[in-house]
Image (cartoon, rainbow, N blue to C red; front, side):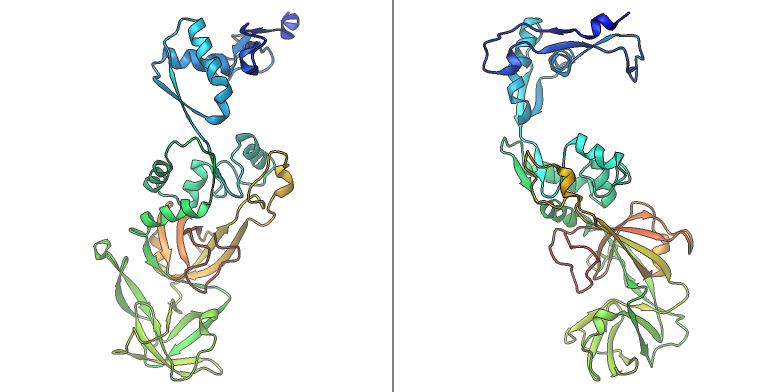
Length: 381
């Protein structure tokens, strides 16, 4: 019944001699009898094109200024012609350049390829440059708004570094990210503090946020057996003073065949060169999985003739299992914290039990190097 019409479309007759291809005979309507509309089903057999719908809808619905990226510059004259031809109220066009990011594709078609091929988990994948993606990665809404406003509405296309984006975010989350500690599950060393309580039943009270005591306090377990990161113990010497963050100074009495030391209650914290994260080795500690991410694309800037499929980064996610402070049990999904000397993290899955571990996503801080010697498994971005 509709086959004869399928080969035809409705075009506007403007000016076939125009240097602007969009001002010659643009298509205004096309027939569609095969794909049901997601709202109207098969009720209508022809639909307006984007070129016709935008100037009509914008004018009728009271839009005063249409914000369009520079890729539509050639169509601005067509937009105005359709409104004049139909006797519609004029809508002014405000043009701005789209923002591109290094090592990133922004096209919805290309991003859809990642979803459809299973390269990512969905449109909210933390590696995606979508609002849902960067939110899951740990962007703060206020920081996102401030970053966008700071860019303005320039017509110059920029290729932005992600570091600037995440540096703005760090300014915001640093104000409220509660501090905790965690130690690598495999790569750690036991330090025996010989004059500490043996059963790990003693506590010390410390601020969640040292710079802002209004966030409250938490209890930190202390004990005779203390876990340290292996990388932090390289080069330790007998007689050296080290600082266990939030606890105090420990003077090392033995380094060969196992670390031992004594707690020095009135030790000079500022004089010690090593200030370390640590955990008392107690059964109440919980298992935690840290996830870090890298760019999906391996080339800094893709050119027009590049096939993005040829520049897919094969290694974009890594996980590290750590032993976490028991206080991490209280965290809820979307909470943002800082693991001291490791970085900022967003809670993607709260702790349930030993098999459903706490899942934390690392939030970039805008720096090219980690805040300490505790580097992750992927490049720090």
